[in-house]
Image 1 (tube, one colour):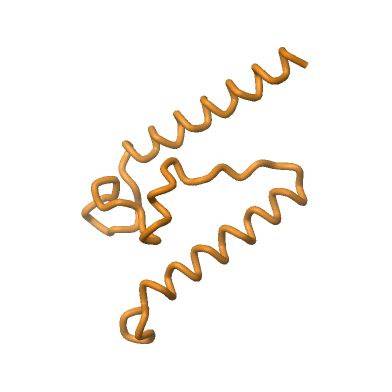
Image 2 (cartoon, rainbow, N blue to C red):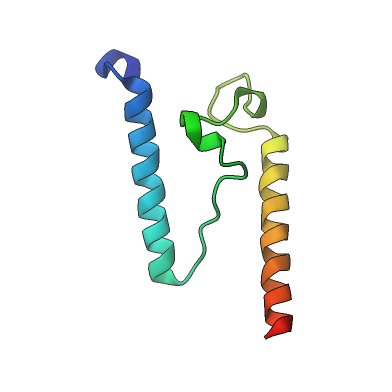
Length: 88
């Protein structure tokens, strides 16, 4: 769809993703929630999740390996919050 309608389709896709992330971060701030960054900052460089972490069948849904990265990120964040709470 993007290729057919936009000359710079990767730039347009990156724009949409950035806009989505900014909106989500704003909502989370408003609701007192935390929006985690992508598991690896390099993921946002291209605007796409690395191919080796995506299903070949559709290119939209990540593999369990991506889920494992996200879960490790959540565990690390919770551990940091728990350490901060203990110190306070």
